[in-house]
Length: 401
Image (cartoon, rainbow, N blue to C red):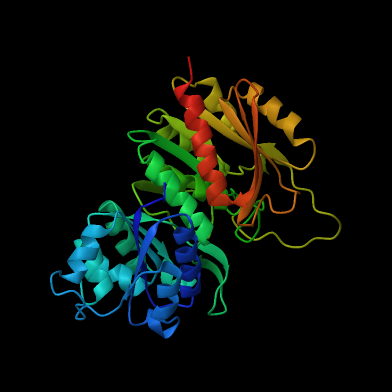
C-alpha cells in the first residue's frame, strides 16, 4: 500500500526522534514519497540533513521560508499528503492541535491537511497519564485523529513505564491495517475485559494474580482502530485508557466484574474475555486487620461465579471469545474450555513461555475457533497480536451460519 503514497512525517522534540529516522527510512524503502516536517525542538536532537538524506526530499522547519514563490508551502504540503504521521508526538504538540494553535510549520500543516493523521505519542510516563494530556488526546480522537499507543519500558528520563514511542515496524503495521480495514468493526459494539481481580481478606491483605491488563488493553486499542465502539471493563491495573470511542469501567473483585459484564452483555456484538478473573475468594472477610497467631493460618476459599460460562449459557447473537492462560498442555486445556463454556473462539497461550504471558509487552498465542481450527501467532508486540486476533474474530464472526 505504500508504493507511491505521499506520506508526511511530523517530528517533534524528544529523544525518540531517532526512531523517526528509522521510520522515514523504512517507509522510503517501501516506496512511499516521504516529506518530513520538524519542529525547532526536534532539530536539537537530529539535524534536518539526516531526514533529507533518508527521505531524498527537502525537510521543512520554518514557516516563513518559501522556496517556491508560486506556492504557499504549508498549504501545498497539507494538500499533497495522503497520510500524516506525527512521531514522536510530544505533549506540547498534542495540546496545540487540540486547541487549534498553529504557531510553527508542523502545526500549521496538520491543521490544514485533510489526510488521515496518525499520532504516536512519546513522553514521560507521568506526563502521558496527566489529565490534561489524556483530555487533549481524547478530544483529538473524537475529531478522528488516530492514536498509536506508546509502549512500556525504560524511558530516557530514567523511569520505567508507558511513554516509549512505538517501534517503527509496529507503527507501519498498525497504519497498514487501519488503512485497509478502517471499517472492519464499524457499528460493532465490542465488550472487553482486562487485568486481574482482587479478592479481599481484610483491609490490608488480598489475593490476586500476575495479570497486568496489557493484552486486554491492546485488544481495546486494536478494536478502536478498526472502528468499534468499545466498553472496557478493567480490574486494578496501572494502564492509561486507550484513546477513542471507549467507555472504561474500573472494577476490583470478581463479583464486581461479573455484575459489570452482565450490565453490558446484552447490547454487545462481540465479547472478548481477556481478564484473569479469580476462581476462588476467601469465604470469610474481616473488617479489621487480622493479627498474627501461633501456628499456620488456614483460609477457607469458595468459588467465584464463572463469568465466561454464564455468558456462554445465555448467549444469543453475541460472538464470545475466551482466553486460556496455561502452563501445561495449553492446547488441550484450551480446547476443553472452548467446548465446555460454549465459546465461539478461544485465545490460548503458555504463560511460562519466554516472551508470552503477564507483565511483558509481547505475546505468543494460538487462536482456536469453534471448529477447532488453530492459528498460531508467533512472538510479536501485544498490539500486533491484538490486531491479528481482531482480524481472525471478524473472519469467523462474518462466516457464522
